[in-house]
Length: 81
Image 1 (spheres, rainbow, N blue to C red):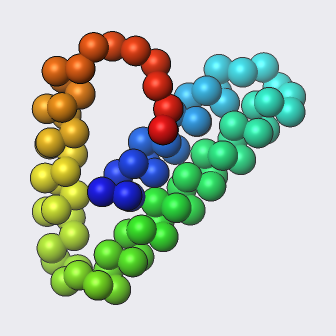
Image 2: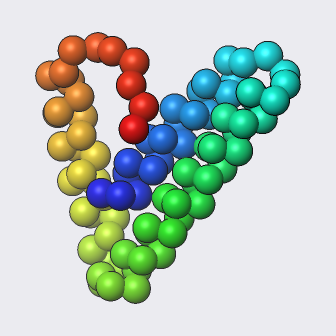
């Protein structure tokens, strides 16, 4: 679950950075996005240490399906974790 949360943060911070004009704020958001990418990879690596590798992708797929169902039923508003 943590890898999914971090991946979503990566997506959102990247979108914010892409929308900003060149400058320190844009660089800041790209730096946060890169940090989220590292966190995503960290959590996936930890999963590989503690879970059978063949079980990781199916579990991620289940989580993404559940996420889609939950988000489909929520009101629309901008939000970052």
